[in-house]
Length: 201
Image 1 (cartoon, rainbow, N blue to C red):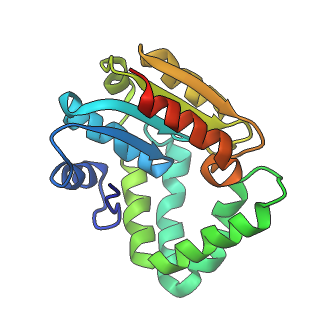
Image 2 (cartoon, one colour; image 1 turned 90 degrees about the vertical axis):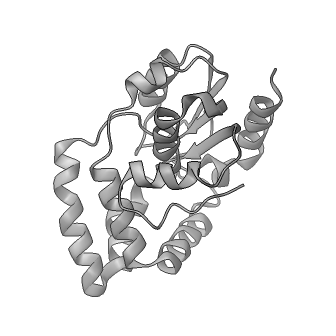
């Protein structure tokens, strides 16, 4: 099942909301912001997570220099400039230079505009104030997949190597010809990795 991540402005509240809606135990996968939420779900209820997949994400708290950009971005979006902020400040970090880059960027813009300024603000604040989850990952011993696009500039390969080193039961997979969104840039290889993760005993 998919649970929306849009109604709260802290990772703690998002995770608590998810845990109130999902089965007693479940497989948990998250991409980017969804991966950060997944780690908070794991922190709150590790006994409920049967297996974990973290895709193109980051276990660390947000760096201070990045935190400082959040409120100006939010204010800009509130002033009616969501499209410009997405176009100039966020989308350039997303994708590798592949044949479907333009179409995927257009899809990302469409999703951002559909979600709107309030969701942008909530998610920005949740990202800004998130906790470091390295100890959460270190404590988890269940089966885990750590996956990212080779050319992810937003959450680079070394972040995934760190998560792989913390998760004792993890497999690390790097998807070629992909950046921050391998699910869209190289869906065949990404789906194969997720299928193997789900089917592994």
